[in-house]
Amino acid sequence: MKKLVFSSALLLSLGLAACGEAEKPIPKNETIEYPTPKVSEEAQWQEEITKLASNADSAADKFYALEKLLMDYEATDAEIKEFSTHIVDDYKSGNYLSEIDNHERMLSNIFKSYYVEKNSEGALKDFAFDYFQNMKYTYRGVDTVDSEAVKSNEEQMNEAIKQIK
Image: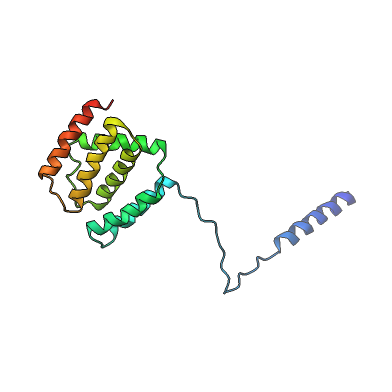
């Protein structure tokens, strides 16, 4: 019985000693650095486009800033496939140039079409090139939605879509 009481008292005193240890206060001139969570590449390009879209720059200046992102980013094969589906579906919806003042939408679609064009062949490459041209020039105000250049590119996109599987 004495051993049991002694063992219990010993365990209790060790437990209390461990609990009695106070946290050391952080000096006022020191900060704790927490690791920055890793953001996926996809989220990074979307975040950059959101920043570009929300700044006060003109559409032309936003586009020129996007060009830097286009030069620095490396799209994955999975992204290229997703981007391809998106731009084709967007064009087929008939609404691809319906929101020219929606900076985030336009910059995102320009971004996607650029990578599809650079990483594709044949009809899909041709389609993405014309899509990119129409998005870029209407967004920057160089062409209007009903301009001859836009209509000509749309005729070429319609032909390319017939060949895309």
